[in-house]
Each structure stands twice: as C-alpha cells, then as structure tokens.
Length: 94
Picture 1 (cartoon, helix red, strand yellow):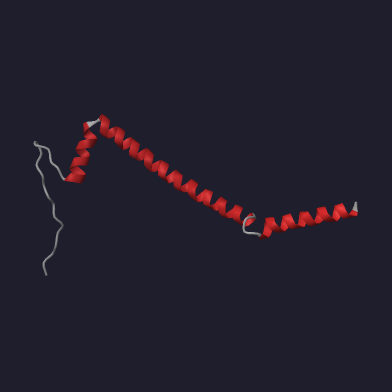
Picture 2 (spheres, helix red, strand yellow; picture 1 turned 90 degrees about the vertical axis):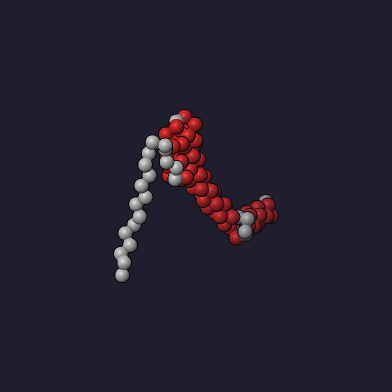
C-alpha cells in the first residue's frame, strides 16, 4: 500500500511540474487566451466595418442620391444644371 501511495504521489508531482513548468502548460494556455482576445477584438472591428460597408452598398443600390454624392465627392463631377465654383485658399504675397 505504501508503494502505491508513493508512486501516486510521484506521478502527481510529475504531472504538476509538467503543468506549471513546461512550455505546453499554463503559459501556453495564457498565451492562447491572449491571442483569442486579440482576435475577438479584431473580429469586432471588422464586423463593424463590414456592417458600414453593407449599409453603404444597400444605399447605393436603392437610391440615386448616394451615387450622386459619391460622384461629387470622389470624382469631382457636377450636374448639368449646376455651376461649379472653386474657392482657392488665400495666399498672402510677401
């Protein structure tokens, strides 16, 4: 009985040492938890970006106003019944 108890204690100590001291133990679990947290945050940011892009796509598909706004801001286009004015910044002469 004493031999069984000693062998069980030895096995327990070896397993505890492996758990706490080896590279595959607690340190690895903590590192993986940190990676999961980082990936979760990144996924949340990407999900928010995807939602914004999806809303923009729906807006572009449904209405002409969004397409006109995009043409004005990104391409500098002007409608036929509009007058374009370019306001240049003031540059004082020396």
